[in-house]
Image (cartoon, rainbow, N blue to C red):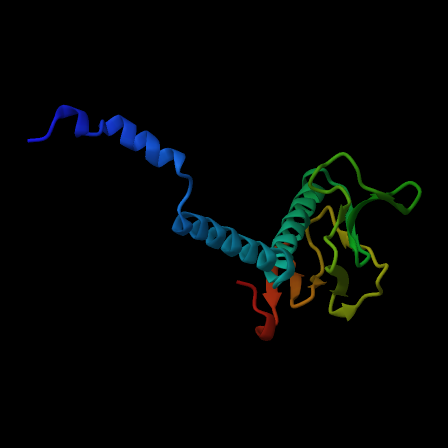
Length: 178
């Protein structure tokens, strides 16, 4: 048996290990985690825009359905236009027979799309529309079928509304939305 002075105290050993620093393996693991996270972030921001285009298209579809329901509830004619960079809702002034920009409803306020995306009117009642057209949403709820098209770097999504004001999101088969 050795003397008691030769034995190292367990608390001192732990403290000595802590003062040595990080091991090479620990540093490599941290660097690998940072590299993987940076790669995923790059893909999320610079990669495929189909997810972002689908989110914006769903947001617009919800706003269209809300506007159609609001037009019926409040017995007013509303309209919607898309200028490429975003969309805007309008209220029909029957006295002056003109369209006025809609305000006062967070869902129907004018909306700008993220860079690289565009939305334009496609058709109304089976006919093509000019870029500055306002699609009417009648108080009666009997609307003609209409469509808008979203485009992005790698995606194309068509929002089509039927006469019952249900909006469907259609994608090209080559650019299907996940």
